[in-house]
Image 1 (tube, rainbow, N blue to C red):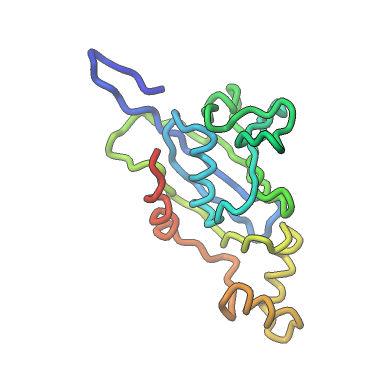
Image 2 (cartoon, rainbow, N blue to C red):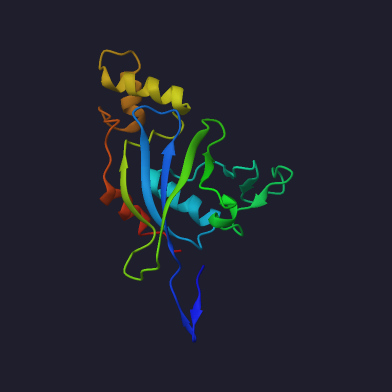
Amino acid sequence: MTTRVRGLKLSPAILQLHIELADVRPKVWRRILVPETITLLKLHAVIQATFGWSHAHLHEFIGRDGQRYGERDPLYDAPGELASERTRLTTALLGGRTLHYVYDFGDYWDHRIKLEKTYAPDRQVKLPWCIDGAGATPPEDCGGAPGYEDFIAAMADPSNEEHADMAQWIGRDSWDPNAFDTSDVNAWLENIKL
């Protein structure tokens, strides 16, 4: 946590997270740095930017004890769901190292979040920051992991009967499922204020 020494506010420790999209081949993962004081709602924004999602769907975090955390919505809140805007990542981890983040309950993009390392506070480190990763993020609304597999196959084969429709849908003729660039991700992360 952020601490004070004789009136000086020190930076929080830095958490290194590995976030992997479950059931997707080729693997899609990101390694990011965030402050230990981050709330789950802010982490949601970071994940959206890190994976290039558009925040067009509902989400929730699921702790290792099964506790669910999400945005409060009086029409749809599940009993026992806790507000993500007031819950810190370190609280949701409950002393453990893993947590799940589900985005888009229809496609059910399940992200496994693993706390890999904790670093000492360092004001020189820009947060949030993506330090590594692999794999292109699947297009939203493609049908989850099975739909993404079909999408990759259609985009790889111009003779596939779905190729033209898929290419028109995403606005280009080809798709590289291995494409990833940390500079693109970090450009998106610059817009997030923690």
